[in-house]
Amino acid sequence: MEEDAYRRKGVAGMVALTGDIEGRIILDLEPQTALRVASHYAGADLPESDGLIKETIFELANQVVGNAICALNDQGFHFRVHPPLLLTSEQGDKTSEDVEALMICFETSMGNVFMNVALRYNKQRMADHKTAGA
Amino acid sequence: MEQFAQVKRSKDGQPVRYLIVDDSVFARKNLARMIESFGGQVAAEAGDGLTAISEFERTHPDIVLMDITMPQMEGIEAAEKIVQAHPEARIVMVSSVGYQENIVAALQRGARHFVQKPVKPEVLYEVIKYVLGEDGAVATSAGAGV
Image (tube, rainbow over all chains, first blue to last red; front, side):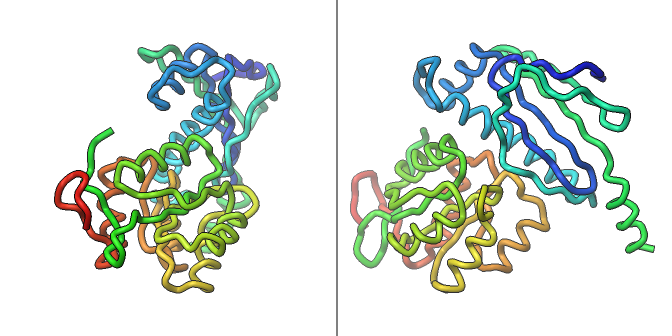
């Protein structure tokens, strides 16, 4: 768990979630990793300035989070996924007592991919579900 | 990309025309590459549900590939509005949020099918053939007509 503020590594897309559990998930790739990943998907070498790099990371974030949410939703948790946003600030919010961030680093052949997950239970909604189910 | 037998419109042998709706440029490019490999043609693109409705009215595509999570107006609502005005519209939802609740909502509001992202070309190809039904014809060999 990470308690300090989040520090962006490179090209980062943030997906916000609302519902029974709420918060945000950040997919963050170092610039050279993002370039390699985007070039791979584009099927051609992209220049470092290409806007498609950001778009690729956004869509990857959307798909990774979307697939995870599907599994949780079919288990009874109800979420809403919002469109990905570009994370522009170098440093994000600090985590708080009820929102801890989990930082995961995936070592891939294209470079390191970081995922920062900060979620908390929406206690009111969970209580509402229990009441409705009682 | 894998080679597919070309799918054309059976009424005139012309390429199937698609409206691609997704807020991600990357996703739109990816889908466009796939449908071109099926012998299709991109009639228009849109980045949100509102634009999708106006682009449908302008181009009258054979098939709409529609994302769900988008700004301004989400895909399920846009699909419902298009089908209300054009019951013959063939809309395939293409989304990473393919949980049961969303799939049921999309189908109830008029979508014909659902494809989960990341999209596998062979899956999309089969769905398109299914959704076109008798209005689509598969060429028996590469470069052949209908």
